[in-house]
Image (tube, rainbow, N blue to C red; front, side, top):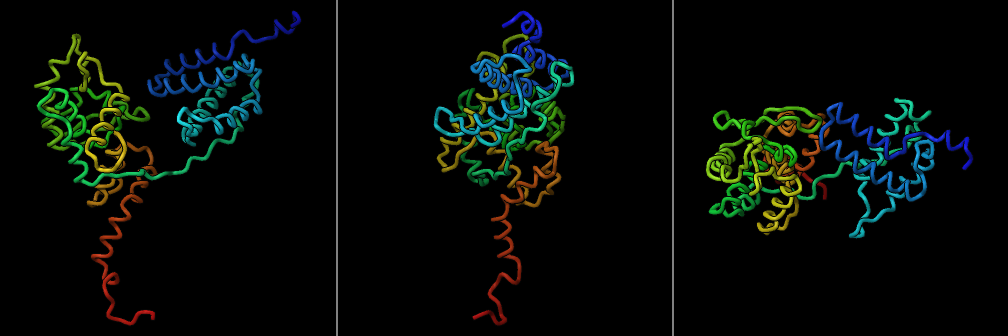
Length: 324
């Protein structure tokens, strides 16, 4: 490399600029989950680029990004499965946002990711939804003679009663639960939106028992107020909560798979079947768009067919002539 070209190279590498981008996201008060995902997905991209000697922003062109997109499409995980369209979209979105940030701050002259065609994400229905009886079977799995069982029963009851996300449950505080008023305040849910939602009496009773009989033995000063703790006094990580819930679903032996989101789907579906307005479901689940909530109307179609069959006069044996 001649002296001139060495002086024209940008001072910051892609890796340096990702660090600045993450710092900017932190300053702008993006959620911890968003920051974690951006850092992880961009690290994958930087490593892929590094293996090909692409270290600086000017090295990255639209064809390079399209090549990476093909890599994601053909990539196979350890179990041999491809990345889902949703996962591919999330990784490409991080790249789009990163290069848009670079262009706006004049680290690059143009944005090579601006015209990239993003993967299409279809709306997929949940594979399984619980009946009320199946949900009760799962709730009965924890050993409530054991402190961990009491904690876990409170977790399951909370998920079933509110339909909250696992991240929301993991960050729930003692002070967010109004035992007398029957509500839970979810702070900075998805999209950093707060919402006050109802919680049933059965869930409240198990939370109250956990708070007064179990949690004091788990707390390690100073108490930060997080509701659900492990034995070391640390907040339960979202992945830990998922494994815990999955274990109880398997133990119930109901022939269905899932984790925290299975309860979320179930709450929406059962409430719709019992006549709840879809906008109430939207408010409960914290959906920004009603279109997201309308997904659950498809899950209620079997119930709708059953009600139609039982109540619509044309569904009964006709008195008039029918085609031969």
